[in-house]
Amino acid sequence: MPNTSPYLIHKGTYAKLIKYVLPRVETFTLSNGWNDDKALAFTNAVEEVVNQNPILTSHLVWEKNAVYACPGTFTSNSSFVTVEEDLSVDVEAFGSHDARWRFINEQLTHKVGAARKTTAANDIKAKRPLFHAYLFKFANGHACYYISVSHALVDARTYYHIIEQISSFMNTGHIVSKINWGNLDLTTLETLPDHYNKRDIRRVGFLPLMIGFLRSGKRKHSHLWILDRDELSRLKKDQVQVDPEMNEFLSSHDIIMSTLCKLIRSSDEVMITMDHRERCPSFGAYDGGNCLKQWAIPCDVGCNPNAIRKAVNKGFHYGANEVSGKAILRGRVLYSTSWVTGYKSIEGINTICHSPSVHFVRDIPADTCILFPIDNASFGLLHNFRKVDHKALAKIDWIKEESCF
Image (cartoon, helix red, strand yellow):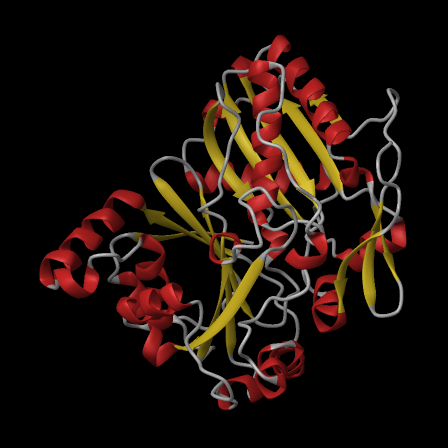
């Protein structure tokens, strides 16, 4: 018998953040190599993944300052995947990232209900299931699959584990990597470094978002930057050659974050979100939930990629009672997250363009960005930044400004 008891998944301040601010985790993957058999296999795989992860049938309940997931029931008549076909669409005509991005976000988002931002508060009111999938079939073996899961339940790592399970069942007929939902009470209740005191937590919690809203309101725009992976790799090698002792362990993420610290003009602090599973012995790689840690670093320090790397290795920058109040009290904080590390796609299908919904960063009253893989050649950075040093940006050859919505 599946567990039908409510799961406590968030409480306190973070529960309010999840309820009112953070949207669903949802991506579109434009791809080719599809036929009727693979489309049917996708549908069957989605249904089997939901069957083996009953918590995905849940709807959210808000009670006593906490968010609960109440599992539903899965039957043979349940449907958590929708398939649509439009053979008039020629994906090959979309020859650029900008064209593909616009097609996804102008033509497909309204069909899946992602034409507006959906938070946990919306899901609670509508009793919407935490999970749903779409498959849009186009001409010449092209298609776009869309997976949507409530951020109240999953972070990007668990989200891509779900896609990994869909891929596994499509290709082998069984699911190899099981997701452990038994640690939800641990993985979702703490998101800040353990040594932060109450003063530190107040400064990096709701406060900057509230002040940011009062100062500039919600952001109504989204921008896409394309980051060249090859150029980033060459830049890493160049920096290692300059100072091999200091730069030996730099990652692309370190360089990207340090570059953002130099370019951003509407924030003075960066809050970087990291997967905490590998840093805590209580958690396994396949523990489901929001197993995240966030830590702040001032931009004038973070502009050095070695400072970013040092903080990543420690899991924090500020010590206890050291979190700066100046930027927080001015609402000048950039919230950054990366969906690169845990990224998974469906094997046997050629990915043309992978994209989160542009609405992920809209309506958030603070500078916000997501780093994600678009394809094998490029990363994408989706952001809502209020002010950027465009002269400095123009001189960076591995960043290309693309769409604005």
